[in-house]
Length: 218
Image 1 (tube, rainbow, N blue to C red):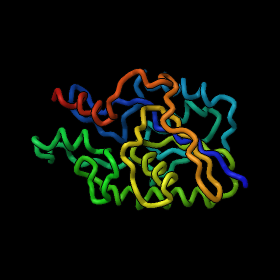
Image 2 (cartoon, rainbow, N blue to C red):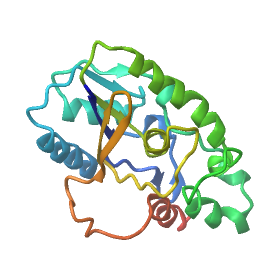
Image 3 (tube, rainbow, N blue to C red):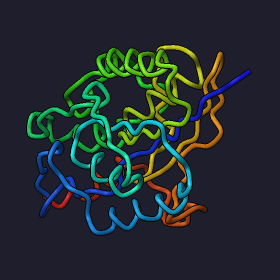
Image 4 (cartoon, one colour):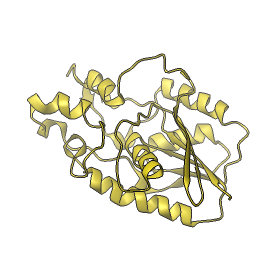
């Protein structure tokens, strides 16, 4: 049996808030910490020849891919963009904290909306066919995909279950690396390798709990 290799990354750290106010997520750049995370990931993946490099087309994935695989020409796949949030001001104040911290928890129902925006079902509607389209192309053997926390959860869930489900407890730290092999079946070899903190000493919060802490001062 021949299996192909996918290195699935989340983009490196960005700042989604400035003085407690949300920024436009489609245009936020990497922070200096994020660039250092991407350089650390590049060191881990040094010497691997990628046949294709996939991004969502959003700036933070393009910047990360440019550091990790500087000699590659990254492709933009808009269907693999991050799940879209709604307007935070439209969420009742007494529901806001729960909406943040419980966004990725357990098996997330398809009807659940991410921060009042796009539903999990809508995310799966575009991510799973995009993955199938990538797999239908037999011209690559090793692929780097630099994507997003929600999208990566959808892909990992698909690889683990073979079905249409989203496992919310698959944490995805900034610039993390997941390793998947795929042929007639899937092998998930590694999840959430964080090059700057391999033992995950830095904390025990979910990403959304950290984001809530950044937003809450407003």
